[in-house]
Image (cartoon, rainbow, N blue to C red; front, side, top):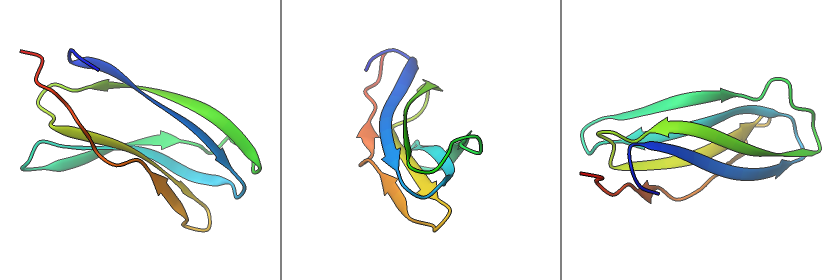
Length: 84
């Protein structure tokens, strides 16, 4: 990944209906997130998520998904390299 305009890609498969997907990022001082709607996705399914992301000013990012039973799955944070 390079440049400020990135796309985070995650391939998920689940049993319980998904509650939310989220993109979480930080800049060493603050942490923020973007909620990804999964309301229309059925149980016992799979999907490839492609989430556009502006990396400017961010130092790391991770993707997570949570189902209705509050089970979560996430990747380890990915360090973003400065594109300057």
